[in-house]
Length: 420
Image (cartoon, rainbow, N blue to C red):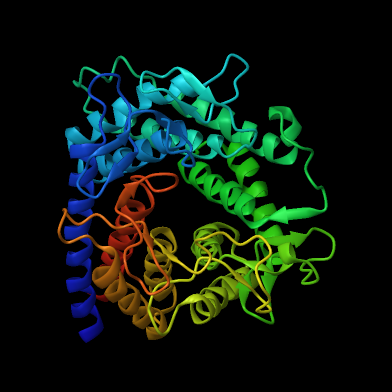
């Protein structure tokens, strides 16, 4: 009973923080002139660059991927609350994100503020959040009141159909990057990030589908993603590795084979818990939970707090290290917050709840900007001091933090309800 009372208080903190985060982005990111969202913002809400980015990797442009991510966020907020202000914010991003499309159906990585094409990245990932944003927005359109003026102007079925098209394009582009001008894929290697993208969207489409033929398609994709995810799992270290060989599994003889991104390993754990609601694979459930604990034990900095960004599983020097390798970033923390409360919901094992409390304590103390409205700092140093004042930049936007809070609140609601 004490755990449930404690969880109720924790849930209230998450709700309050979600309100603060959404207020920050609602106030500072919306482009009233051209539509869409500004994504390069400092702690005080100053727009650092008015170009726009589709994905989340380039400061100078409006990023269509970030546009898709924020469309997802505000669509979900509207679906959960019915607040028309959230729908309006989602709609402005939905209108703008289409400007990223090229004549051949590929997606530009970034555009100018007004939507002119700037940079084409020969990688498939812009399609992930373009598809995700469209799918969630289609659900928001369906929920509009019958007498709302946008009900007749927006076709939810067509929006969802385009989301399906880009999900299929994503899988094709991942299988053969030459279709979008990239280098030929290594047919022998699997990337954990690709598995997550395919898996997560397959679950989303499956849950929203009524057509049995399409449900069967997504079920097959989920089963294949589960099979591939197992190849990435190190039973010795109890983590999911970034790269795996499709025929042999893990290979620690190379730097790429030894690379572990704890944030990804944690994220894939909760993706697999979502997926396993439908495929009921006992082994998958075991490694998802075991891998979550193993990664937290390995990746959480016991001295300073926070989750280390990258590491070599054999403690060798990182050959492809970035300056952030030992730093603490916002998104592994947000993924871990949701993963631990979800795991507690699945198991009722207090070890996961204790981890959730520990993570939230670190988030409150180190990541949340209490001076400028409650959004999270994106980048901390190894010792968890603030590295810079960015609230939105190369990767950070209005997505990982609100998604984790939205999902965590929902999980807490289910746990509390089940206890009554």
